[in-house]
Length: 292
Image (cartoon, rainbow, N blue to C red; front, top):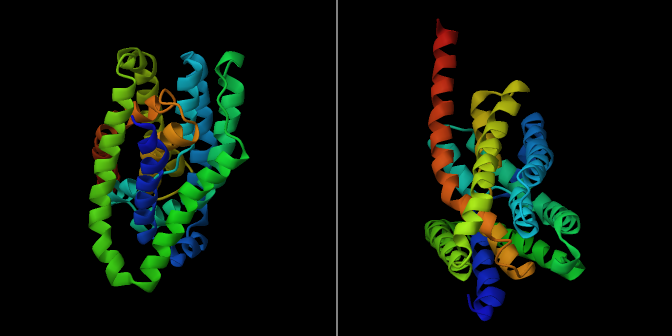
């Protein structure tokens, strides 16, 4: 992948996608936390503590190579996105909670993602393979995530009709960009792709399943209703792999680090759809049992 595309076009394209995410948010989405504080706190705990911990355990147990371990931790640190809202809509989750979680995650990730990635680099990297995420790069991550979202929210506030017209084209652009960035990342590492699939394929499958299972069943065990638990499951289970790959290719400047997110993207939608059908059946059984 050409260096000019990586350093200029990828961040620009991601910024457009994050603006699209901002178009779906309003200040009320942040204020709505007070209505569902328990569900929000549980979801954040699952995403920022449990899943990051599980990703770390997967890296250790499967003895992933250092660069791939950093990539999996980067993926774990990446928040959900607008696709999670779509899956929640399809499988009857609490859309309002989803949007609230997306809003909160977009802000928190700007701070937590650099911390988690820096820890991963320091822990997993050998002396001979130094990559770094200095303060300037942390600011870059902050700018990539937060500023475009704020721009999108401002567009929605001051030009709501224009933002509605932009919404669908930006969603299509997001999907196309994800496909292109996966193709680009795989093409650059085509000589090693089979090796990477062998090394990180199983790890990403486990991580994907754990994300969805934890996202649904932990809230349910904590007394959260089914619709809200579905929202949590998709917000936690569908990570923003586009963001992870863009940060790997631009901020960290290493295509190998992008591989876990690229491989994860291949499995993510399949597992999310299957899991959606599964929890829908579980919810239907619960409804029948309550009516009996």
